[in-house]
Length: 265
Image 1 (cartoon, rainbow, N blue to C red):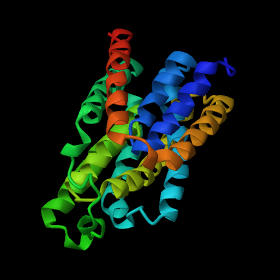
Image 2: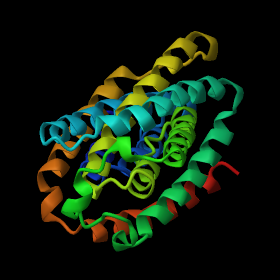
Image 3: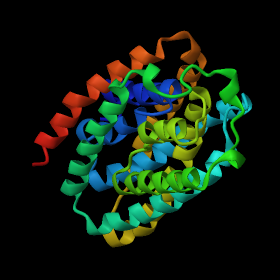
């Protein structure tokens, strides 16, 4: 099973999507682990958090070197998200695996909707110079509150079902924080890493109570392939039509979410 080509290909595609879009790819990790690697659902969610955290952190390092990660947004959005991810992982012990997968499929449909939305409809998608240096200091109280609430919602989902939530983080940073597209993608990767590690820490604590066994060789394999994908995506992100990529990815999520729903109802 470790040498199943579909595992390698799926992991590379997951990382590639994260590198290109700052979102979406992590939502492939749980289905990859459950339906191709045949991991138990709860173990797959925990493993997904670790894999996604490492891959997102790798991608964010390259963006940090380009000075695209906005650490003021990391504090306002990322810290609440990280704490909420820990709480979401805590909640997982009271939620059945089938319910988690149904929630996951529903979130996947939501992600598809965000992906299919034309990128031109998003604010600051053209990276205009006037918006590049937007400051958190200029935020209104309402913007602060909205960012915190969005961070809590995304983090809770991340901890509960193992998604990175970039498809929600990027629009939130664009609409609420008025960040540029490039900064939203870069900052999203960093926030995904924060919340993923926080959620995984709680799952490791719950291992003894839930009899959760992690497949370390599989985690290493998927992580290595996905890191290759995210680095490749970071290299070619400015050379590919991002709007078209988002729509193709969003369209592909629809049958995948239907498959998960079918297998859990």
